[in-house]
Length: 194
Image (cartoon, rainbow, N blue to C red):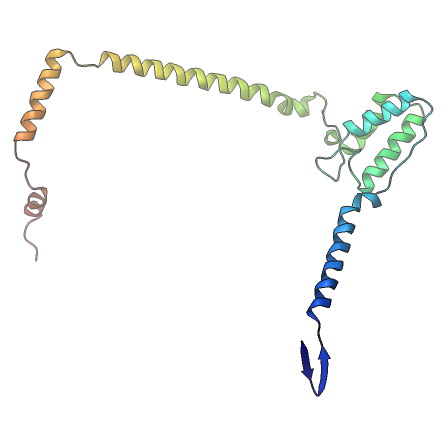
């Protein structure tokens, strides 16, 4: 394919463009597929396996303040890296689990814990599932009682043989009796139009 502009001819190859586009797409696919390879891998030296287990437990149980619903172990944010480093330093310094948790809660609030403590501030959080369950059971009981009462009322309201015969005679009379034309009756009631 040739294009001419202002006296010069430019050769444009569709085949070369398609090949370049394929190379470009493959490059971007590889870059996005390998994004985890560029992540920083933190390595910490611990004195014992107990310290390593404590560290793993902390970073699995604490939430990243920036990432909303990700723990410190799964977050790549800078604040998570700082918190992991603080936890490591606290464990190396010999602080107890309670001291580490208290420090984190004091600094970031109960939000940092996946399982917040039971306190007056979190009563609603811990009590809501139980309250909703009790409300659901009460509503279910009310619905079942109303259905039972309705079925009892309907059973007591069934017609006996005499009432059924009377109803059928009234319906038969209604079928045989001519109905008035409602449109004529409505227009007669309204009076003449002016």
